[in-house]
Length: 500
Image (cartoon, rainbow, N blue to C red; front, side, top):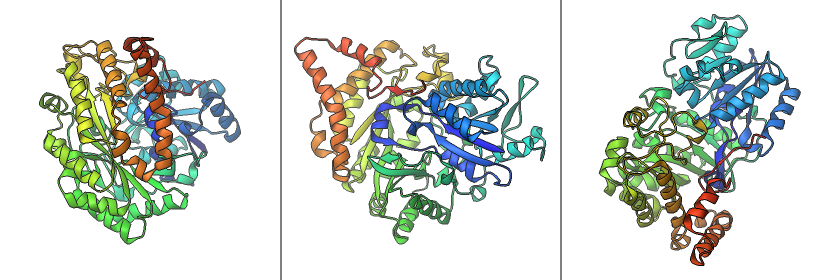
């Protein structure tokens, strides 16, 4: 039996400017399937570029799979469905399986959707390693499909949902099979060949906007240091020079992160560049942590600042994650003192937000001297508590058009701002960031990646300077420029979709 697993091509242009990374989930599934049952190939469509449709057609014709799988986040789901329709048009007997965050969150909705149901045979919910392997066994008659936990399957045209699977024991999860990738050589971070790995899964916090607990429950499961080092070694063998740890909250256990850093140094793996996402409270809790991270080769941290006003901290339920604005300042200081690039995220468009809150986020980013600020718009993901609260207040303006659930499109309004006003304010603060000429001097990107820094600047700043000239000489006003950017595939916050 042959299986072909795809990760979607949809990306945010601003992120795509910095990095192009593979999907960890599909290679982890490939690494945990019994090789006596089937052959699994994986394909990251983000690396294909344009003409994804013809690429998929050609790949199916050459590889001749018996099953095709699609992993997708919420904003990628429409693309996954488009490709599922394509697969079924090529051969209606090809089995199609969906997995990943969105199918896990919205499996019941997908199962009852008359447009989607004809093109999907199975939905793998939650962690896919064990469920997918058992699905292959069931297809081959080696077990009953009714007993495959975490699986939804179609029977007589209707979906049946088996009971959920408990979170996996990390000691039972084998290493990813990166050799299964069909496309291998175009992944990077700041232009340096890169890959992805994980040291833990899950998060015990209860942020109202987050869907992680729907994927894993409120668990924090840790891989052993030995396993982490083995995976780093497997990444090194691919020729990658940078590595992103995709842990949901690696700083839940600060002492463990310190031990990981120490082990990286001890085994001589500190010649690689490491990147991670982290909580404010975790980084701020111990000055020594940032020093050890820098010594181990950590070059960048995506710091979840999220909110700077008490009302938004309450709405997002991030008090434990952040604790105080003083903690934010301390965390950024610790990282920057150790020459670690700080990408700081803010979530805007919350129910109580007014125009001043948008500008306050911008000023905070400037005051903190963030290397890259990321201004998200609140997004009501399925099954999150925030979605229920916003729906109850009548603040969601886009309930089901999931292609816009990318954290940069306005899917909500606030109590005082329309969704159009939210969108315009978001555009304005993103543009005003480029007026911050001090950034050219203080940012850490140019220290570690001088060539790529020049590339980033030349791709973004001239566009902004041209906009400034147009407004200065009254060629166009801000609103006109904003309307142009709404349809611009290469605006900082735009979503690139390459299915043709």
